[in-house]
Image (cartoon, rainbow, N blue to C red):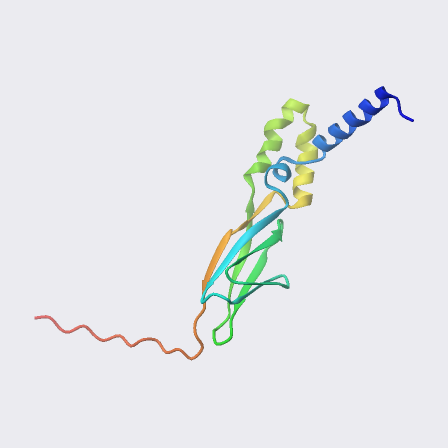
Length: 148
């Protein structure tokens, strides 16, 4: 079939292809992120993009998008929080390593990191929401006694 020289060439080409087709943010931080979700009271249902978990728990989301996290429990008002995206500083490794490889990773790594969403991180990474009991009345405050 293949001779030894051809096999080495193919392996070398595959290694170079891998190195040139992955951005630094993709390699160092990945394209998904785990978000920790907790609530008071616990055992509430947390929903993001149709995925549901019970609190406390974790959910894995694809980077690059903004999300709305909603937490609900019977007898309590629902609460929600926006999960934003912020710039992933690992992206700058493309620029730092570019000169080492004659600029190729700058272009390919940049495109790859943006296409995969790895150029972004989701924030906050940990969420704790306190749900308000339905029909709960606020505790009355007693006025302070006048001082003389």
